[in-house]
Image (cartoon, rainbow, N blue to C red; front, side):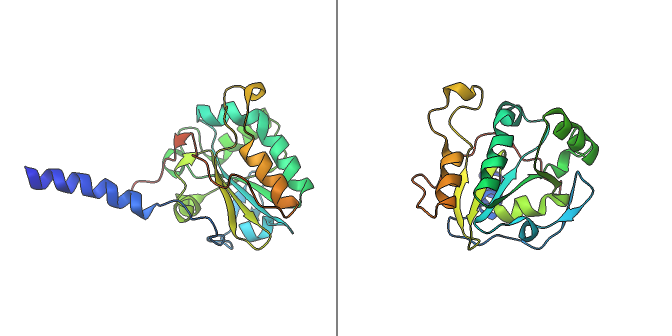
Length: 199
């Protein structure tokens, strides 16, 4: 019985280590893999990257945390554009495609919230796996050299925008745009677990 318990504990731990979050300073993983967007076009992270960097947001349609942060998504995309940072939202929920996370669902969701940015489908959750992303949303911000300079949450209050005290991502975007050091480069990503495909 003791051996069985050890095996059961070891397997989840090993799986967690395999999906370890991308370390700060890392280069963009799988930058040339094409993903289909809700606009019907296929793009890669390299295609989206701009002069000062790239913001990758692993997100979805069905997570309550994502819904709560929706009133900030468009503003983040606009500020990213202003600071010459590419912005892309990626849906990694490959294990839930027939339960609210397929391409048609994504189109409806984007239309509902008036998205003004790229929203793409991560087929097989390959990018999420490479990044070590675990939640929706899960943010990764890269600088103009393609190095990871911020990862984690959008801010410190998903339910109430007016009560946000720490604008983690917005501050990081502005710092990268001005080629300044980010004061807080890592925060805890809060959200729903990514629904990876069954092996």
